Length: 248
Image (cartoon, rainbow, N blue to C red; front, side, top):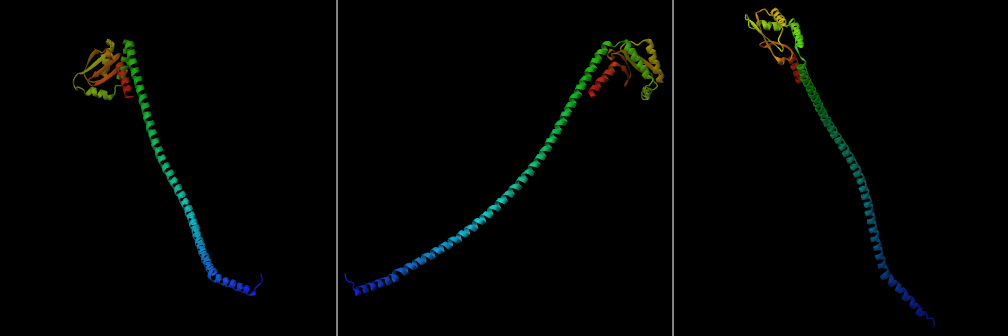
């Protein structure tokens, strides 16, 4: 094959024309499209970076707000616990006072019950003692004991209160004063004389004595004029002992 210069020149011209056509009709639109695509990608990246920055700021703000909320929640919980503790202490104090009052009432009631029981036991003991003494004296009392009581009565007549003498003096004025003398055993003539002499010396008015027997006296005498009564007998002393037991 022989080299032909004219053919070679034409081929060069065709190639140059092809390059011009490609550059004119293909490469330039492609570069424009690539440039637009690059600009769009850059804009999207910028928007993404902006959104990312906003998201970071929002996340930071949310974190700060969450931290503040946790602090507020912790403060509120602490305040609530303090209020609950204060309220609990207040209710405990009230409950403690109520329990103390109830305990004091129960102790007072228990003391009253113990005192009532002790008083009842003492009363029963005194009543039993009175009954036992009555039975014992009923079996052992005799004329000798009554004679001793008679002597005690005479000794007491020496110290008869003026109020009693005044009552006897003003009773049945200007009339004979009747005095009743009761005893378990008959009085001897000497005892009758001693008794009447004592009253005659104490009362300045005519006197009349009436004597009677009263086994209920157990031993001793009872001298009375209407409402005025002078006891020197065991029945009166034991009844007083029993009444003391009832009033104890």
